[in-house]
Image 1: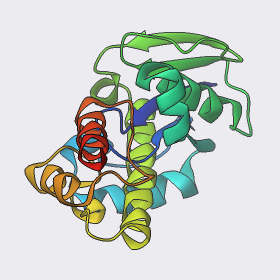
Image 2: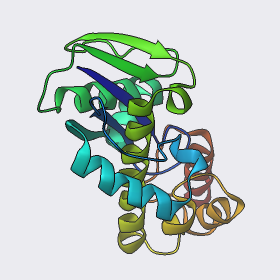
Image 3: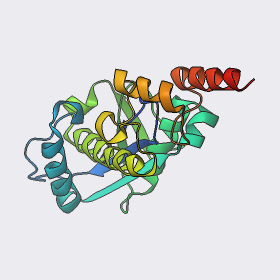
Image 4: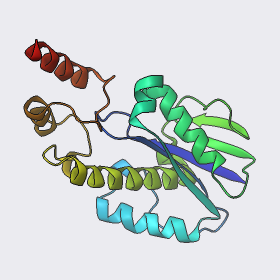
Length: 193
């Protein structure tokens, strides 16, 4: 059995980084699998339901903002991917990883595939599950920290998000190790002196 693995949320300034692992199996019958970035949100949601109900196994995991700030985004992403593979109820013989790196410590052999989310259906499925889970977290964060627009921009450094950061300052959901957030933290500390 082979699983596909992908992440969502490396570039945003806020929220966890998510990863998913999916074992589809032969004849999975899920039509329209593609890289989550090219799918409309409604289509991603519909495909996520199909994946969760028809895949042989799936798992979604994350690395927190604190882990991102402690480890850096690359190592936190690798940690989330390993957690996703570890969370599968069936152990895969191989993990196909989107990108050019294989997370260390996988319970099976791994193979990195650049642009794998557009080439391998199992990686596409993982991409969709990771993106849907991450988007849901950011919608929830909007309720906890209103005013930042997390439900709209999903933590990415859009002009609206940067304007909210300038006005409100960073909140606990922001990645303090990321340059724009660190800049606003430094500015706020300077103003306090």
